[in-house]
Structures are given as structure tokens and as C-alpha cells.
Amino acid sequence: MKTGLLALAGLLLIAVIGVAVWLGNRESADSFDYVAAFEQPATAAESGVVDVKALAGRSFDQVAALLGAPSDCEQALHSRRCSYAQAPVEIVFIDGRADWMTVRVYDGELMLAPEALARFGLPVSDPVESDINQSIWRDIAGLKEVRLVGDENGVMYARIKAITP
Image (cartoon, rainbow, N blue to C red; front, top):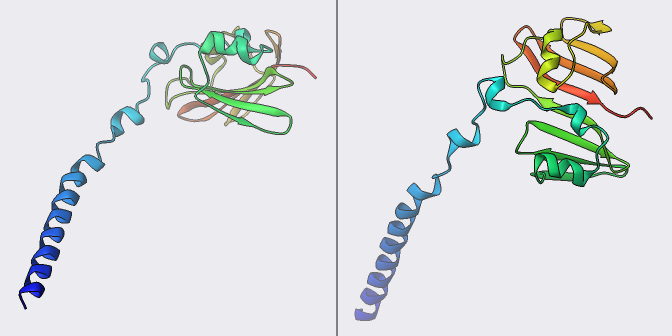
């Protein structure tokens, strides 16, 4: 009987310690900084201009010298896609050269208009094609194609095809 009481007391002590540890870790388990993780620049001045002409056709190392090391890269059969934390840009390297670029634009930062080209270091001109959701320029500033995609709230992203095959 005494052995049974000691075993029960031991189990109770282990349970109390387990609950105390769980309660102590529960508060620290959610110490993730949600505000910082989803922080976005409010204006073009804060997010900066992404000079796509300076990136177009450059090697992986040359782009890294301009933007810093990529935060993430994915290898595909004939390409390598990299994202950069220092700039709101994703670049697909084809044959080792920066070819397709997608530049994210923050909500309401730029209107879907020719003047938005300046945000990417490009000269302002009228698009060759345009509708309610996109404007397209071809053979502009040495780039094969520039496509601004958005809606009535403004540009969401720019997709640039840099190299003519």
C-alpha cells in the first residue's frame, strides 16, 4: 500500500512538473514577430527603384554584387529562379544570365500608367498594348518586353523579359 502511494505521488509530481513546463513554454512558443514578418514599405521612396536595366543579362554573381545574396533559389532543368530580400524582385536566370524578372509593387504604390516605368529605371513612353489589367511595352531601353500588371488600385507587379533569344 505504501509503495502504491509513493508511485501515485511520483506520478502526480511528474504531472505537475509537466503542466508547469507546458505553461511556461506556451507563452514563449508564440514570440514570432508577426508585424515585422509582414511589414511592407508604404511608398516608392521607401522600397526604392529597381533598375531592371542594370540587372538584365547579368550573371548570377553580378546580380549578387548589386542586390546581395539571394534569400532563396530554386533550380529547374534550364533555369534558376532566385528571390532577393534586399529588393522586391525575383529573377529567373536562363543560361546563367538574368532574363525574366518579376518586381513586386506594394498595394496602391503606383498607378497603372506609363509614368510607373520610372519606378523601374525605364523611360516613360506609351505602351504598345494596354487594357484594364496590364500595359505592355516591347523593345524598350534594350529590354525585350516590359509588362505592368494591376487593377484599378494600381500596379501589382512588373514582369520583364530582358534578353532576346
